[in-house]
Length: 202
Image (cartoon, rainbow, N blue to C red; front, side, top):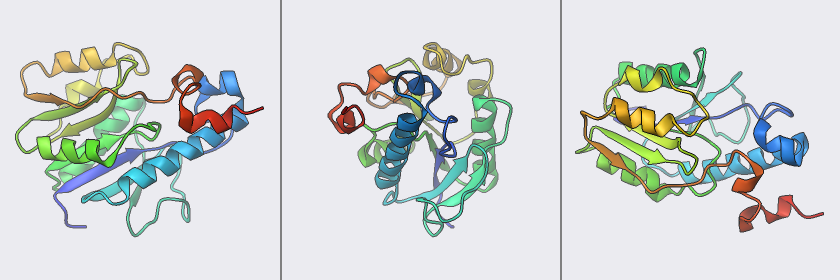
């Protein structure tokens, strides 16, 4: 791999009862797993043709022969005590490997398009940081040219304060905000979304 750009994708190993736990309270573990697999497929579709090196960070263990083609995606395991530590580790590893523009996304965003990722890489030419704001107050994408360890510490991950607190850490740098998108955490996020109606048919 010799690109100066890296796209990091955080995923959970798709195992029953371990993914989309807030969603599963409304739809059950089986449907929650089906929806997560659907979101993983969409994430692959959106990212596979992006012009950058790509790495999938699994939550538990590296899966061979899954939907992530090893010829397109390097594979790693997340490391750290919480989400912030895991993201910081992934970025630090990328910069130690001499990448100059690094984006990190999750895998639970149906509305993400290649144009959002391409815009983020493009904006990193002149901006210090790119953030993709999520409707719930978090973010679905973060793009850096160097590590900012403070943005990954002292956050209440999974709450509506994450983006506000992150931007406060970045007050002295030039930040570009992408369009607000809706990531999928609870049933209200998708129950009226046409792409998900098949999961609610009785």
